[in-house]
Length: 444
Image 1 (cartoon, rainbow, N blue to C red):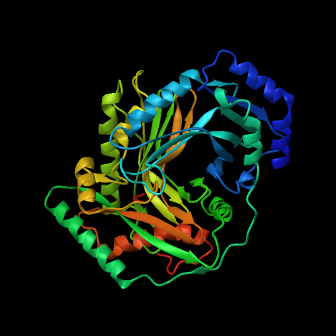
Image 2: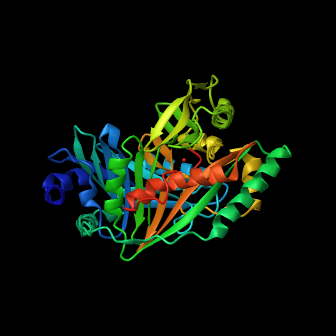
Image 3: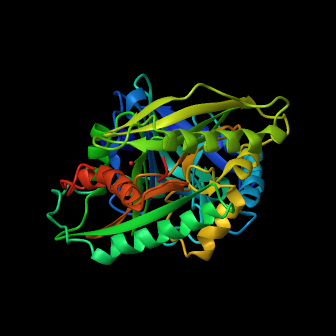
């Protein structure tokens, strides 16, 4: 894989095509040249870099894999207008973007419009090298701003240093502090009081758990395990050379293609030994999510969006209730307009949305990195596909912070909701090569 990339990089045709595209382009304009590579491509993990930024997005069931190495251009934003700022910046990039093929950017953002440390609150980046494999075609796209064209080949060559494979470390799983469950119970009971008062119908609470190892975690090995374990999910990762944020999510936040959007209304969870997926609690949660998404997007559509019948969505040992919300956006709407309207959905925040967000803020809800935010790709034509960043781990050295959540509605049982977060964390515990303490699951 690396040898083929180096040959493509040295080919005179690449330089000639870059120079052709650069004629008359502004100095800040991105250039992207796509070349075909031999072979099927596969999961692309062999090219995961030894350091520096990378982005990974895989759909194992569809045999679609994308890996971005380095950054040709990047834009960070935060605050209440973060999506508007990214929308304006990306519109400028798209206007000037010169490309001959599979040009795209990656995007990741936090749940709320503040926080997200240690990653930027919201980050949009065009990778310096994009590897794209769909089972039929395997390509590499080399990107650079026009102003850096002469120095680009050396930068690209530097990125082609894959990480040295290392065996999975032995993990030290310490029993959780008994106060963890007590604190969870107190938070659930506080949420139930707010629900009983009529201020909320649902609020999603998150949990964190830190795992330590006797050696550094191998993100490549974790991702390979997730590919095998969660074939029906979207596997994602972003590394900045220090931290690696990765996971496997069953939930699409927003896809836009030619003005038509597709969104998952996913809520309610079951796992072996849990109450039935078709329970009244799960049905109630899913109905809240579906109703809220349709209501939020209706003003942006010529006709009201439609929801499919509810079915079961499998995600490893977990299952969820899902309906799909589809519609045609007004001609003037961008992907970011739709994103502002729909995020966060009640599947990760609560309902009514603003009341739930206010409650979470008042009760010091903490969500690291981009957990329950978004992770996706944006095309040069403005279309894109963004997933909800669930079932995640934030990895640094020999430590990994796992995150999961549960939706609290009237009648929720604190112990049952705690068990649900344990079931969801088991996805990453298994990928870290650890047998979970119990087999006991989208609200996180």
